[in-house]
Amino acid sequence: MDELRHALLFNNTLDVWVALSNERNSEWRNLEEYNHFLDHLAKGGVKLDASVVCPPIKGFSEKPPKAFNIRLDDSTMEKIRQFGKK
Image 1 (cartoon, one colour):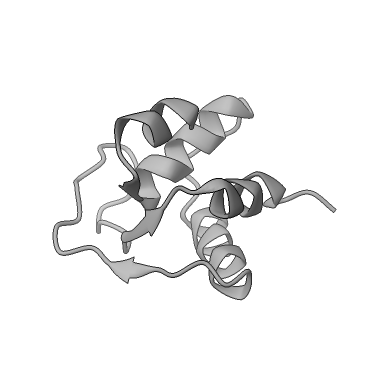
Image 2: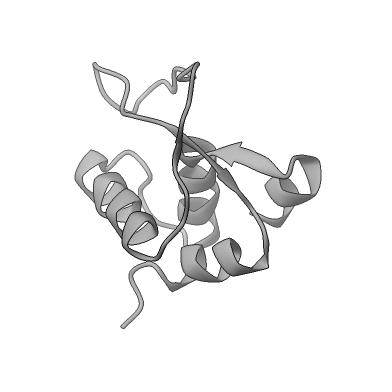
């Protein structure tokens, strides 16, 4: 995820989800878990801007999931890394 952050200040949630899953060695193709991730971000106050272009990611699902643009500042990065931790 740090590579995404250094490349661009704003990234789409699909790319962030895949990067987070790779960091954790977990399956990123789980659409239900991705939707929980989006809920986690929204409940944490992360502004989710609708992505005009939803990049196709092979292997995710037949129908592309919703993607949003988010700003990867320190606060958002912390909220992303808190996902799934209790």
